[in-house]
Amino acid sequence: MINRILIRMKVVQMLYSYLLTRSDFNILPAPESQSRDKRYAYSLYCDLLLLLVDLSGFKISNFEGRPRIERIEKRQKNDCTRIAQALASNDEMADIALGHKSFYDALAPMRLRLKTEVRESSIYKEYSRKKTQPEIQDEVAMWKAIFSTVLLRDPQLTDLIKSNPEFTHVGYDQALAMFDATLGDYSSVRSSLVDARRGLELSLDKAYELYHSLFQLMIDLTHLRELQLDEAKHKYLPTHDDLNPRLRFVENQFIKSLEENEDMQEYLKDNPISWVDDDVTLKHLLDKILESDIYKKYMDAKVTDYAADCELWYQLFKNVIVESDDLAEALESQSVYWNDDLNIMGSFVLKTIRSFASSEGKPVKLLPKYKDAEDERFGPDLFEKAIANRQDYREMIDGCLVESRWDPERLAFMDIVILTTAIAELLNFESIPTLVTVNEYTEIANYYSTPKSGQFITGMLYAIINNLKKSGKLVKE
Image (cartoon, rainbow, N blue to C red; front, top):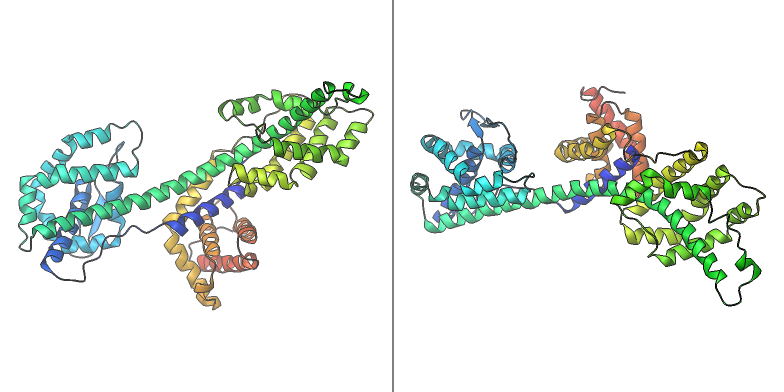
């Protein structure tokens, strides 16, 4: 039910937010000043990074050429290798490994003992016993504690560290501060990425909540009208019409079926939704409904049936509720996601009302959150591919810009995000035709970016597709 059109929009939103606010995880550069303290501090800083990688189950080989850093131990539950993996993937670590081969070789006789000390420490055991996957901050805190309380108190490792002829106490302290800063930097970058992933999941959850919330709005509007009619009966000097109101609207069979729907009840059990507290929005929407020709025609009809009751709410939702500024303001106050989601979720609400109409009063299944497991994975997978390969994709974008003589500096940042996401889809989802990808991201550009972005995105994507096909990286139609 949350279709790929909406998922693409959400991925673009989250990728835009993440790339706009993130900072890259970087290994600190060598100091410009060549004082003894700073030379030693940077040398030890590099040694400590190598030590962390080494004790995390990675091996460094091929020192004669470009060193390779590869995992030699299988990942286990709650292992603590995410930092080491990030370091191993960083090109600068190969240069560090090459320049610090003597330190790496000197670790050989104490490597097994140091690994045992780490795994036998209470810090590591407490980390390993966590029932759920630890957060990246937990891994950072664990390594900082292990280095300060276990490794840097090991006599043999301490002797190795102090054997460097450039050793100074000031440099030693500076190295530890640099090491802590790098781990903290990794933590903040990874945390922002984790937050972006969670934001994507949350926004999709909120879209599905909106689907149910719009149905609950219909129910609460009906209850408000029922309350108004009841209050009119008990007012001072009620009229004949007050005492004998027409109940066709409040006895609408579609609303009754919706209230009794098992899927609706099951969702509300875990996700309580109500518009009752927003009495201003309810009152304004109900006034517009009562003033509408749709309502008057329905109330004046000689007879109605279940299909007519469904048709009333189909027309009211499409022509009165969705078009109301009151609804737009209410949605914006409840969720930052909902106004963007209303068009797509509204179409699914209308589709569901049609299902009720054709059921002739029999039980109806509300739309599931996702059509299938493949659609459920689509958003997270697309986001991950876009993040992991964004630098390569940016090179593809810049290459086409050079060919078109378009100044990369004039390219809107949202256009870069849209193109990055589109390339990720082109290259990683074989079942999606290229034409579908081009059309979908053109529409997203028309909605989110500059007035001319749709046409620009279309041209860029076709140029990128041609280049990818020429290079053999893209074979699908």
